[in-house]
Image (cartoon, rainbow, N blue to C red; front, side):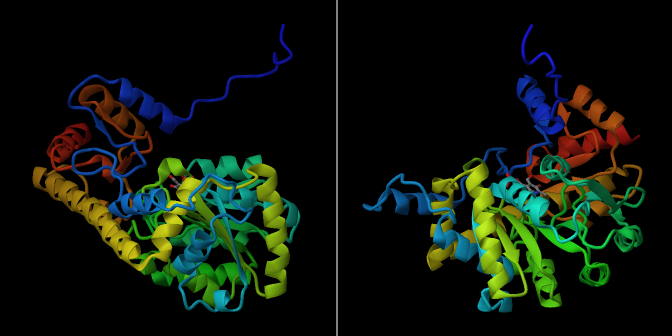
Length: 403
Ligand code: PLP
């Protein structure tokens, strides 16, 4: 017997499992459309030129060392990240109503925010609302922190567009003080974002119902190629007068996946409240990670503070988002040319790393078994896994499976 006899087996993580199966597949034609990471046109991971240069600058800094960071993280990163999200002329920044702490990428920012809210949310027992569907870790993170997690309608699974009426209805019926997780841009897994008008509707009902926005931004600049466009909703909510949290990841937009680089921002309506919040956020972070990860923080901080590196980064963002857009256009065009049954405009209407194709679990399984094409069973494909060498193969395979 063991003192751990009560430990049952946890269910496997579907996405990580898919990646294990892909790696084990020895077929030369295999295609990974599950991957949530950018790949270049040769199917290879890409180190951004801005990141390469920042690493060179850091390696030549004679004062460089491996000391612990302070509890707040790399100051150039946190101040730069706040300007990136809220805009450098943001009134919230000018009034010192924002507190930013470096986190273990987007996941860590969500976790620290979730733990802080578990203790300090204004309405005790108010639930956390996540979109249906959403990134699987959202539920896990907020449940782990002790919240009750509910869903709000998001995707119309028939038309593959935003179910705005369902969403507004669910938000209207939410308990006052509920926390609502919102994808700032490039919704994962659907690639469907609200229009500006729809964001206005969402803001209006959330203000009316006194709901608390918690933005998750993992794709700023990666979605449209413009940092400002991709932060539009967050800035609009600040202007609207919301107090809120924002979890920011530099995994995708700087390609710093494994370096675990991100920030948690909080916005309140007074400098004094923000000061008190900062002490509690620091306490939660100290108790979970003690201090953030230095290497990625310094790389991102170097890029954000140096105007030449920043310009290079803007070019890199454009390179990535343009290639993704080309793959969207290419896939849609090929499917339409093949006369594949159904409509395919949603592939180019959607945005960001993923497309919600409308393929079902049986079709996904068939694509894997017959064509060695790997995608999640909800029909989500990562456009980053497509390139000019495999696009035609993938389009023909989809055509076959749909017929
Ligand atoms: N939030 C969303 C919606 C994501 O898609 C991701 C990554 O896939 C993350 C957060 C955070 O990832 P990371 O912890 O690697 O920054």
